[in-house]
Length: 189
Image 1 (cartoon, helix red, strand yellow):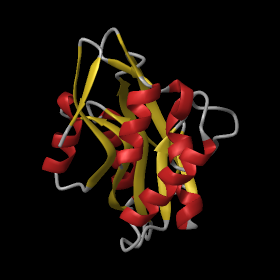
Image 2 (image 1 turned 60 degrees about the horizontal axis):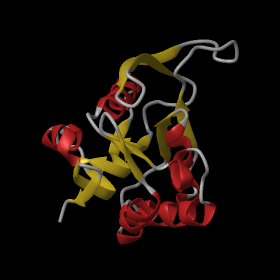
Image 3 (image 1 turned 45 degrees about the vertical axis):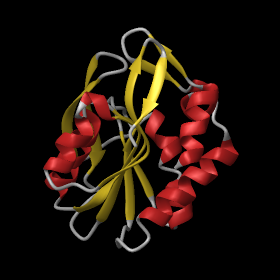
């Protein structure tokens, strides 16, 4: 998606520690027109895959999971913290956040994910693959099928995409970054 690359170059910034700041349009202040285009592209990419649910991790993945609107399927997000409104039996998986350098135990109620579901995993970033691996584990625990994964931005140099593709998961990234050295962003071609 050339539009994503253009947006990253015009509004993104490389921060110390290999962090790409896209808060002005993707995960703090959301450009809703651009988000609509993201949803349309994800829906186009997975139109023939029988997806009946989209699954992401709270919080930054939720906006990207708005592709569910275009696909006309329910969106489900795994919570990072158990709250009083999560009752009953849950599926859980450990996840390490690269951006926050924090470990979470993500969870989703068994009431919302199960056999017969064909799930598209969605997230804003793919770096080391931990979040998508955690979502995969939730789906496997539920007996759900995974159609693939869609991410807004893949940091290809961090290996998560290669790991997941190596396991046979279809991964579609709207922009794939090859490097972010000296503040310069170079895309995979």
